[in-house]
Length: 83
Image 1: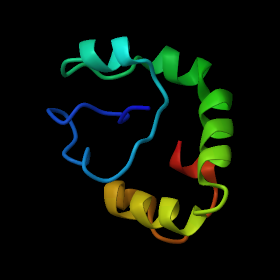
Image 2 (image 1 turned 90 degrees about the vertical axis):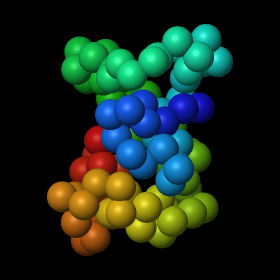
Image 3 (image 1 turned 135 degrees about the vertical axis):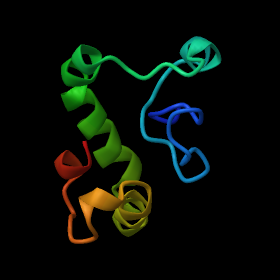
């Protein structure tokens, strides 16, 4: 698992893990962001992973997303909105 954005780009790495990844990718991401095409190609996989990983703690997931992504708002309960 890894954070979606490197700390150098988005100061929320202390909150929660957004994207699954390998140890190699995590060690070599530096301050690069995931490519838009890669994110779009991975959308279904990411949404499925979130659903499985947070199925028992959805309130925590959506509370943390509202802090990390303030423009999202606090009224969402859809993983696709977070994506």
